[in-house]
Image (cartoon, rainbow, N blue to C red; front, side, top):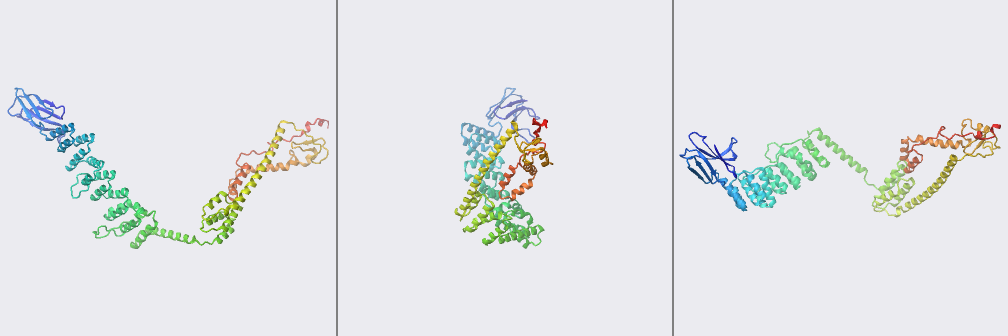
Length: 576
């Protein structure tokens, strides 16, 4: 077998004796095309007439218009014209030739003639690269007219229209009635919607009964809720029911009255086209959740259902009863809270119960500040109670008064002046105490330093107990008191290591320290005092001062400084 493969074209030429009685047999193959068995397609068979000599050479021109076959007997057979006898291959060649010359309009005309025989991607790729959108559009239009376009071709054509902003062509392609459709409708709707051509997408959805797409465009893109509701009301029962379950909440939020009316029809006697012999209805329970933010419409809907369908489910009746009770409770609350302007009764209530609930005075202050008329006498009385019981800080009082449209500065001027005077007096008193405590603290530090570093010399000449002349044996204490031993023993039968005169004061201090330790875990007592106190800050400060929040070291007998009997230091003791 002799083979000849063209370099620039997918053409293969073979010579062989594969049929009985015929020798030689010349076949031309297109290796880019396949038959039903998946084998390369044989596009032409040449049978030399009267020649039995074997073929020795084959020569084919790359333009596929000339084929020469040489035989062993020196004879030559010429085949002129399209050696494949495929007209589109010649048109493709001519199109390629025009494209190479830059004549894109002429090239696309030739390529259109090859539709159905030449792979469309070959042409599309050429004109995408060259960015010749007009030519590409013409080719894609022809592709659609011959019903050979795929979804990708439709998407590409619509993108060309939108990029060129050629609305007339887009209208012609999509919105022309009474003609056969040559494209995928869903693909066209997606592209038009993405490009912002909502009217075209809407037209396609309506013409081809794409209810989901139609409502999605109306509600999500155009926000035309009335039109969407009217469209649903014209659908058959099952479609209307399904779409109300899907879009019911959105429609209830935007057009509650019309949505409620449609749901009434849908749940009682729905007959969209008046053609059904018997109206259909659905279960109202499936739509109660749609009214979640509109109780008034839900009440109206349930009343209608109970009236038209007395055999409605218990869920309908229970929900209706619950809504009625809430509405009645709301009306009663409104009646109770009805404005009566009995200001004297308000003041009497505050005076009667204010000692139990001081917050009543604060609420009364808010109330009077919100009145349209100036209620100066009542406000002054309330401010006096607020000041007396220290219910609010001046900043909060000023803030409340600032909300009033009638209150003036003279209402709170005296209150603020009195408060500032008290604050100044308190500051002065605190400064005096600070100075006093600093002096006492410094004095105690000096005494402690003296006791640590210097010997204590006892020079008391009289007994602190009997006031007689001090004689040995005697007992001395670091506090400075001295006693006859006999007097000390008579005073301190139970406390033999403490100064009798300082005992009561020392026990008082120790009691305070022990109380601090006991109060350390009394959280409930602290919170109770904090809630009941007029000045909560003072309670917290008191607990801080008492060391409740700090670790406390208790001074016990084992840790207290030992009282020494200094008689042993007396040089005359051994002589007694």
